[in-house]
Amino acid sequence: MVSIDSIRTPILADLEAFDEFVRDHFSSDGRLMSEMIAHVLSSRGKGVRPIIVLLSSILTSSANNRQWVEGERNCTMRTYLAATMVEMLHTVSLIHDDVIDNSDQRRGRPSVNALWQSRNAVVLGDYLLARTMSLGMESAQYDLVSHIIGSVATLCEGEVLQSQHATDMDTSRQDYLEIIYKKTASLISISASAGAVSVMAAREDVQRMRRFGEALGMAFQIQDDILDYSRSAQTGKPSNNDLREGKITLPLIEVLEQCSSAEREQLLSKLRQCKTDESAVDYIQNVVESTGGLALAARSMRKYVDRATSILAEYDDSPYRAALVNLCAYVTERDR
Image (cartoon, rainbow, N blue to C red):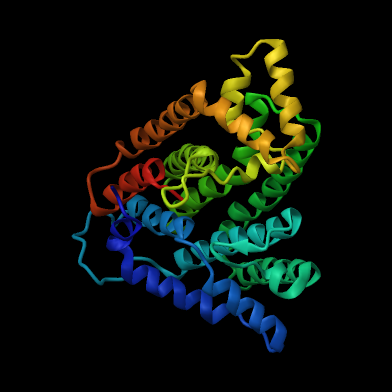
């Protein structure tokens, strides 16, 4: 199984420089704001998006044919800026997501809203967004800022679209694909293309990396939705958070598309009960498992992964291309 550490190996020095860049540019004089920022920065996840920015920048750079030397910093400050912007936009979206969903945990730690209440969490998210945009403008890298900033509106549209369909319980396959593109794939797509923009790569490379990131992002979110139905090795139980929130994701869509009208109405009726009735959650879980919903969703996910890896095949072999190929494999193999 591919590990995230093996993917990080070719850019370890650059990731260290990126972390320094983030720490140097995100702070506050106020005690409470400083505490919240420190908590968020120490709770960051695997760093998939900055990894993509850094690898993409080196892969598409005119200097990508030089011999890779372990420990060397290959990226420029412009690329660290791009990685910082996409990572902080992602961080802001998670802070606001936790407020919207009233989640009290994020990556196994208390969420900002659980520790400091929702009103402070919203202000923190707004502050980080404003600081990110300010950092971009102060750098005078206007092409990079312009390339990345549009993703904010797309993320917001995706959140509202998901809420709308969760309320109406009418999510079709096309609706679902639009939601996951806007909520997840759009920012991963921007991460990949921003890496190319940061080194002033050819327009063809920027577009190619955008398509790569979009395919990878779609696969990433589908796998997330599959994992929500997958039984934990520790507990033997799935988390089923999406069902409790009334979300119709691809494993359930695969089942609904095979159902008769009566069976579909039965499933949707159960879905309406999931917020308060665990037996309804168990019912839908068992139907999705027994009718092949997970396998069909996994097949769709692998098609996106195949699309992403085929785009990478257009580049010469290098440690950076290999790391991105391994990232595609990691998406399909990860269990959380």
